[in-house]
Image (cartoon, rainbow, N blue to C red; front, side, top):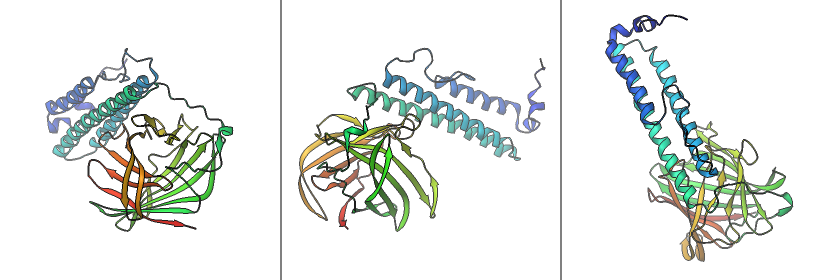
Length: 333
């Protein structure tokens, strides 16, 4: 066994910034772990009270994963702090790493609380839809979400960053996922004339008329280059499962999963109103449907979406900011 070395030997610069400061920062980090319910050096997360309920158990495990990621980010930040020459800047770097961990752990808790709320609202705890390719048809003609290949819907709306412009193209391309032939939609978002998101989505309709969402290839764009693929998922890969994009018979108050790729894409929605009259630049529509869409991965971001029969989505409103986009044009080949 090797004898423990004094802090001054392990970190020669420590004497220059006061050993007391170093120990305070280290203690602060340990306190943050304890405050979050994660013993220092331990696995973090659910402890000995892990639930056998599938939904709650998943929430606990996702919280553990979130905490582990936060601790890993802090460790990397501290590793970089060790190579800051200026003592004051180095101390500030370490303190910032501790504060960042605190924020990250708080966010893990917020996500956990949001997921538990979802568990309370869902009619079933276990999510394992049976997908039989024979139960699916080759078209998508759900009245509230028709996806006719060769059709492009164009949306616009003002945002704080500039004019948002969306082109939602239902292509002739298909992709087979879990044995089901899905229609591919190409969704391009621009703000102020610059493309910021370029996504491929895959949908299919079952024989009952429900439209299922089988995955997406989501590409965030910065300066014309792909900056991130965050949010991308495909049903059947790494535990991801298809969700419902639109029910055949929408029912007010029923919460349903649109996506199920835990820790990556967890969108849900519920119908909040039916029979609305909505006017957008393309016309006035009756018997419209309103949904509330959200994700526990970003609990403060909630949207209301409006669908017109025979058309599909006609307006989306960000509840927090009040910003919205609405249908301005329909292009058919």
